[in-house]
Amino acid sequence: MRVPVAAPTRLDPDEAAAVQQAAAEVIRGSDWVLGDPVARFEAELAAYVGVASDVMVGVGNGTDALVVAFAALDLPAGAAVLVAADEGGYAATAARLAGLVPVAIDSGPHGPTVAMAEAGLTTGVAALVVTHLHGNAVPIAELDAWRRSRGLILVEDCAQAHGLRVDGGHVGNAGDAATFSFYPTKNLGAVGDGGAVWFADAAVADSARSLRQYGWGDRYRVQHARGRNSRLDPIQAAILSARLPYLDPRNDRRRAIASRYAEHADLLGDLEATVAHHAVVQSESRDALAAALEACGVGTAVHYPWLVTEMPGLEIAPARTREAATRRDRILSIPCFPEMTDAEVDVVCTALEESR
Image (tube, rainbow, N blue to C red; front, top):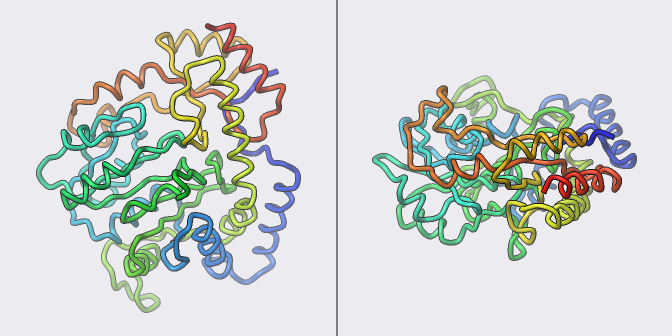
């Protein structure tokens, strides 16, 4: 038996049938760009995360969700944006696409701290992006208070945190905007790409709706600068609507699998504040552990092997990122997805135990 690190095409039969029906209904209908399927999903996702329906905006993918958020929030060209050094390059890439300058800050086991963010401050910083990496909640209260004291915009990247609630509220509610990706491997995945962003201000959300469609005011008339073509596809929206009711039980299954692993390995994150998008184990001998697991038929991956300061295309200045760098060399993602069989989970647990 080989256990893959992810298997997005595996679906429960009932969920698979709902997905197929949703796609077929869009094909039979008349809304092939935006329209009712997108509006319906925006309203359903807004209700799920606990915000008003008029502040949720569907876009083409998770990166565009960040780009549209930066533009709608009117961050000036050339402004600097603080991003965690270990966020994978997604927020930094979006900042570059939006004409902004990403600045790396260090990140601890639970994300950046106020001290780390403060150390990254430089001239022209206008915003902070907090990424809830691996589906683990970043403690936000102190960071939120700090950024308000500094007059900074806060964007929470919830791409890996669908359904993640802390103290009864969904992550993302502290900031000026929160973004989602619906890449197939996400906790709520499309059959392709998709994204969404919600805003604290309905007027900013209205601006984002224009920006996702060329910056149009009247049809065919570009009224707002920095517009782009990034509309959530109606088939993907309908599929996401069909899958949304399954999200909480699927997250429960992810957490149950991660809890099993925690009995056999040093698991990154707090099982009380996670949706286990990735199950990340830590080892001083990461490469040896990966080889041992692979020999047992267990797939692995590193999320992520490079810090943003090590990605030449992002042109980010070196920064003090000791904690992020140390952890990067120790982490290894192992299989954790809801459709894993109990037998597959047992294989991974046995392999972890034998690799100690």
